[in-house]
Length: 254
Ligand SMILES: Nc1ncnc2c1ncn2[C@@H]1O[C@H](COP(=O)(O)OP(=O)(O)OP(=O)(O)O)[C@@H](O)[C@H]1O
Ligand SMILES: [Mg+2]
Image 1: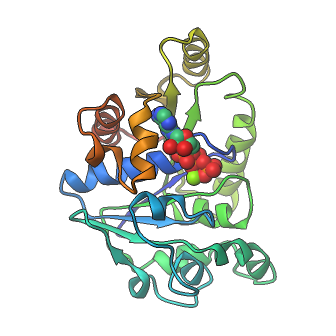
Image 2 (image 1 turned 60 degrees about the vertical axis):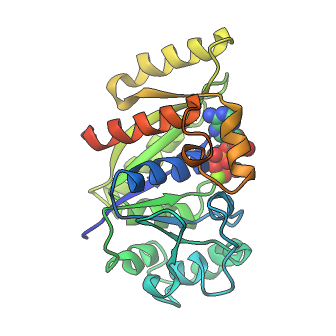
Image 3 (image 1 turned 90 degrees about the vertical axis):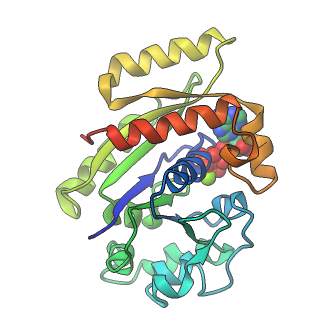
């Protein structure tokens, strides 16, 4: 496969998966890379995060995942040079049920992306552990795991690593973890530092050095359909996602 395919995944909801997808993809496109964002969440937050209207019927990640349309027929340009998107629709919420009886149900997305030619494809995964996410893990060669700096952050991570391991053992031996990303870090809240230290002591250099702070400009930006990097370049959120892009490019996956 020509492209580096990166799943942004954590079964927990609201930990910063979509925000990380949108901003890391934008930072890399601004740096001159050719990047595709695949919105694989029926909620379609990455789609609206780029100010794109939700896809219609087959002309969306739904059609691509089910192998009903070619990815090249569905890709849209965004207003950012070098950044392309496959939008999501609510139809995607039926995909798990439709995939279930198919014998190649784990590898539909991998087949669909086989001829995609980008430097990076980022997959914004939905929360949970359904067939959509198994398809994402099978189609990817790298994973980024956003982890919100809050009390229950580590809960569920063991289950995620077990799932990653079983995907490696069965359908995708090439799957590597690029890193765990600490998100929504609040330096005025000592709990954030306790959680961050705890995660680093458990996972060592699997954790990105870059930490994403809690920054209101990030949530404002998404409500305007813009990545924070373009909404307020000087905000702490934008600066940290640009730093993450640098670190991501220089990092070896494990
Ligand atoms: N660093 C941050 N600072 C402030 N707000 C943030 C930050 N990161 C994310 N948010 C906000 O938190 C909410 C959840 O973030 P996001 O949508 O990226 O999480 P998610 O993991 O994709 O959620 P879901 O599991 O529902 O898809 C959003 O409203 C987003 O704007
Ligand atoms: Mg999301």
